[in-house]
Length: 400
Image (cartoon, one colour):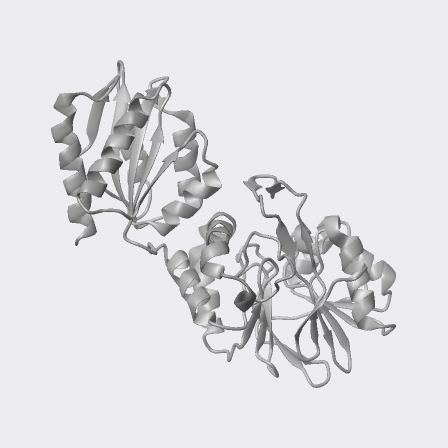
């Protein structure tokens, strides 16, 4: 049975949801599933914007057939060739043998790399090119490295719809609610949207900034991403979030404590630290155990907050492995412009603080506070002064 939604005049959502997939890109947990969005324009010519992951291709085909009502499919616009959006291209070609494919040169290269027979179907477009399909004229805007090199976005100059590829997307299945004003986004969606952006696109902030600059010249009335809700109201809210994320600016003045503890002693110190912050009036604070919090959540929260306290036991004369993995992801995703305080622990040859500091020194715009705290096996009375000093240093930094 088909399941479609009308987006606006002449335009229909023909995508679907996958609630069975446990790990997006086989890395990131998605307990609420994910949507794969595709859009079908009915004009003098029919135009499909992107396909979907193979896992929902049956639903996808049923949706297309229901909207076309016997019409042929004239064009397929491929904004992004990653397999969760491009996997069903060959199925479209088989079912609609006269279809022409509109995309970028690099996208056609990727199609061939994935084994798709597209010979004779290609219509290559470059940045700023336009094509009319009847009442609707589409402008094609390249967006390389948001987050693959072939990416473009497509803008309908008649109705102001931006088909934004993976930009402005989110984890989470849609549960029948397609539009942002049909959900409580701040309550139910912002964490998944942040985790999606920071882990999937976060590395490419300058490229997102370039796309936002191009988008600022367009009269955008609706944003149709490839994952998550369609935005038809309050666009400025979500655009501002992406502006901050892509500039690596904290969303909030807040403290995050991330601790690595083998036997509970470093965790105990982290609990004492959190209490001291609250007693000093800092209540916007969160704590995470690096051993049982997925790194994608840690990354998303690190993008959100301004100040991070890393508390790590020394392990094999180095940084605790899961703390090290977190730091490695942070660096790989180009995170910058944050303030860190460090707590180290060890029963002998305590080195984790020094090593974490050296790692952070190799990243852009990371401010490491001087008042490092060092524990020997566990926190004791004579460590209280050092902890108080660390708390005061963080608060002073937050008040600058």
